[in-house]
Image: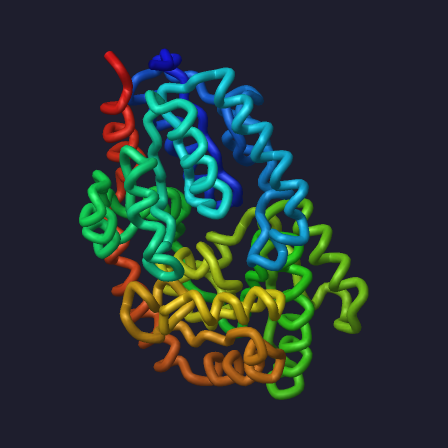
Length: 380
């Protein structure tokens, strides 16, 4: 039997949203019991809280789609081997995996085999119910606790024998902290092209082309674009500079996504966590999604869901209009924006429906409840 380090947590997050959830959970764990020692891979906030022992890798690790991952297989294999070696050396009491299933499910399997005394927790259940239900029994074998975001996920994992809890969505805490008392500005369109460089490079030019088309019909519209980081802002400003829109027409603001979602008239949002954020604030929006065609075609074979947007999945119907792959083009997006700007009653109805669906995400205090569940796994 391998002796574990009783207060050590090895944590892995691979995206901007995972860094946010991870840092909040790390703080909640320290409030629950201040003696935890954190190591692992995450983002800038997790690195800051751990004084560098959780390394910041999200800018490189956050890629979308099978094709994109395969192109960088060697890089991911190196990071995987490094993480596994570090875990073997540290022998943590808990391996805390935050979303990021492609990397984290493989890591869980290796750690379970090599360090069976280490408890394995997944925070943000992998959506295998959408793309590969055969993996659920395998996950049940390797994990000790699954923390789900949505109530319907719990029985899916518990039927396979895995202890599961739905404690609400961590976004609720984070978004409540950033709620402001402000009305929506007139004729202000928000552009939210995502948090990954490749994703932004694929979607932001299309969004700017939709701006050009929209201005032909509605010349008084104003535009603001949300950048997830300074690096993403540079990418977006570079795309703007290479285009033919007048200088200053589209203002890029960094780190103000949640603020903008509460003040714009309507918006265009890249598929992902931002679509839940927009719904939580009742922002009328359409969703856009583009990946490499090989990735998309494989996903069509694997994924058995009617919708891509999480808020639409939660609602069981299409609230936010989805423009996917070929439909995610400037003509369709500009047409949707024009109609949204022209019809205040339709915007108000969509806003109410989004707010109602988002209310199912649960109550504040998610990180505190999750920290309590995780702390129970530590040896006395």
